[in-house]
Amino acid sequence: MAAAAGNYKRILQLLEKWPLDKNKAGGRDLGEYLRTYINRAYKENKFETNYKYWDKQYLALEKLVNNDHKNKYKRLLSSSATGLTAEQCNIALSNEFLEELEKEEQSIFRKLISLKPEKEEK
Image (cartoon, rainbow, N blue to C red; front, side, top):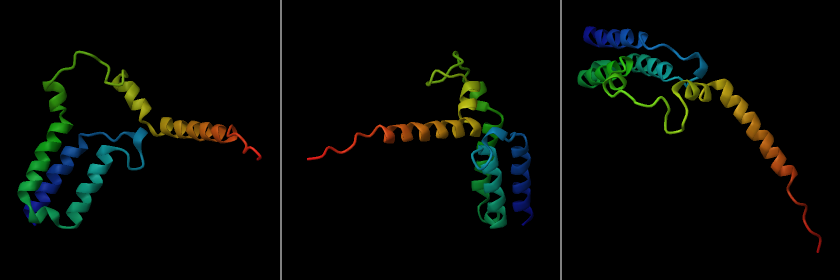
């Protein structure tokens, strides 16, 4: 049990370095999801059964938290495949933007329905 608790605390300390993105609240933030997943796994005693798995998970999380790949493979361009910068992508994926987009899609759909031609009488 002590080793499981040690692994659990070690992973939680690592995740504390990863800030929560308040623009993606409600289960859309990866950091929030990982914290929930780790807590659930600990409560279900999954840490006790597979030490090697959780050691691998710790190493993978460590690479994510420390931005190892971002630092190892520097990008020459500031844009992505979409043509947007990282900041613009964050805005486009925020809850507020997605809500506005959904409202716009609903209004476009309503317009399309209202433009539907009436049935011709035979």
